[in-house]
Length: 476
Image (cartoon, rainbow, N blue to C red; front, side):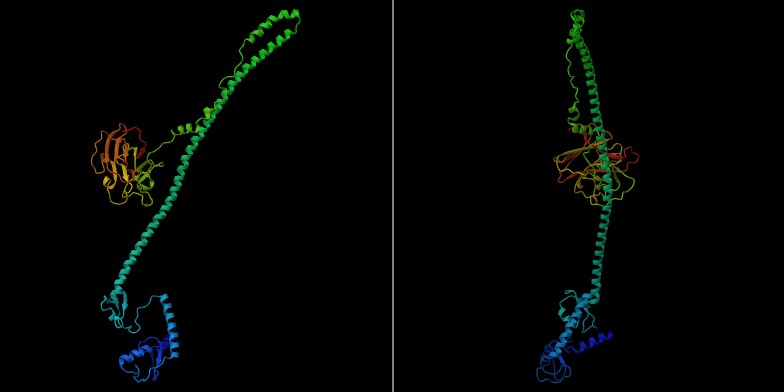
C-alpha cells in the first residue's frame, strides 16, 4: 500500500505544472525539456517580461506547441484522480486541507461559513468576519451540541408520547373487556326479564285455554245428558205408537206428559267467550312488555365520561356515580384526562334547557355545576366562571360559589338540582325537596357546556359517593 502511494505521488509530481502546482492542462514543453501548462507559461512570461524558463531561466525564442502525448497522460491521470476524489468524498467528509500551504494555520470565514487559507484566499475575505479556525470549530461544536440536545429532547418527547400510546393501547384493551362484560351483563338482565315475561305470558295463555276447556266440557256434559234424556223420551213415544189400541190407551198419557215436559225445555245456546282472547295476549304485546320493562331500567340525564376522570376518582359501572378512591389509578395520560380531581359529563349542551339531580347525602366535599368545553384541564386555574366553570361548592361545612363567596341555605342539602338555561345564560341550583332556589350564575355562553363534578374524600360520611338522578319534570 505504501509503495502504491509512493508511485502515485511520483506520477503526480511528474505530471504537475511547476507554476500552478496542478496537474497539467494543455501542457507545452520548452527546449530545455521543462513542461508547463500553456496558460501558466504565457501568464508567467507576461509578468516576467521575457520568455525564460521559469525553472532553469534558459531563453526560449518561440512559442512551444501542445505536447499531446503529455496532455493525454495528464488528462488520464487527472480523470482518475477526480474519480478517486469523488469516491473518497462519498465515503467520508472532505478534509479541509490546502495542498499548497498545509502547514499554515487556517482561518474561518463566518460570512461564507467555510475555512480559508490565509495565503491563498485571505485577500478575498478582508471585508468578511474571519476568526481563527479553532475558535470557529469551538463555537460550531457548541452550536451542534445544542442542536444535538434539542434532537435528543425531541426524541425523548417522541418516546414519551409513544409510551403513552402504548399505555393507551393497553388501557383500550382493558376498556374493551370491561365494557363487553358490562354490556353482556346488561343484556343478560334484559334477556332474563324477557324470558321470564315470555314464560309468564305463555303460562297465562295456557291457563286461559285450560279454563275455557273446562267451561266447554261442562256445557257439553249438560247437553249430553239432555240428549240422552230426549233419546229416552223419543224411544218411549215411538214404542207407544207401535202398541195396540188397548195398551196404547193405558200408557199414552204418561208418555205424552213426559214428552211435552221435555219439549218445553229451551234450546241450548253456545256459551259466549268460549274461545281464547287472542287480542288480550297479542295486542300491543311489545309495548306492554316495554312499559313493564321501564320499571326495571332507569334513565340518567348525565353519563360520566371515564376518559376525563382524574386518577383518584372511581366511577360506577353504569357511569352515574363517582367517589374519591384510596389509591391512585394507573390510567393513560390522554388529553381529555383532568389534572384536578374532577370528571365531566360525556354529553355537552349548546342550546336549550337541561336539568339533573345529584344525591350528595352527608358527603363532606363536593363541587357540582357546568364547565366549558375548552377549559384548561392541566394548567393552573380556579373553579370560577373566569376560567369557564360555574359551580356550587360544599367544603368544610360551608356552601360557596366558585369565588369562595358564602351561600346561605336553610338546611343541609341531601340533593341538589342543577339546571342550565343555555339561551338565557343561566346556571341555577335548587333544593329538589321543595324546589327552593339556592344560587344562580348569569353569564354569556359561547361554546358547549358539560356537566361538572368534583368529589373529595368521604372521611366518616355514610355517603361515600355522589349519584346522578333524573330530575323531576315539574317546572320551576
